[in-house]
Amino acid sequence: MADLKKGARITGSTRDKLAADLKRKYEKGASIRALAESTGRSYGFVHRVLSESGVTLRGRGGATRTKKK
Image 1 (cartoon, rainbow, N blue to C red):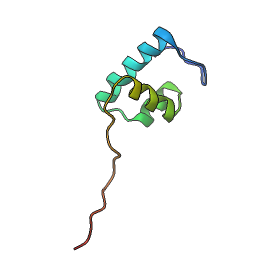
Image 2 (cartoon, rainbow, N blue to C red):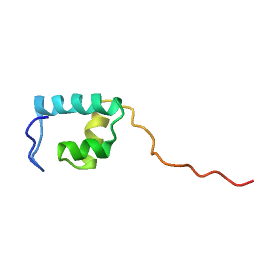
Image 3 (cartoon, rainbow, N blue to C red):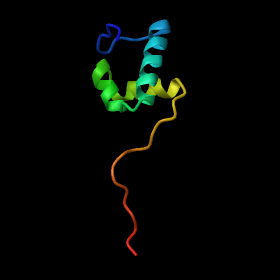
C-alpha cells in the first residue's frame, strides 16, 4: 500500500491504484472495515472509493430476523 497520510487528499493515478487494490481485496472477501483499518482511511472513504470503482457491495452480515408464525 502506498504511503497514505491520514486525511490527505488522494487524487489521480494514486487514487486509481488505491481503488483497484481495494476492489481486488474486497472481491476476495475483505470487509470495508478491514480495508479501512489497513489503509488508515475512514469507512466512508473506502465505501465511496469502492462504489466509484463499480463494485457491487455486499449486504450487511449477521443473523436476519424472521417472523414468528
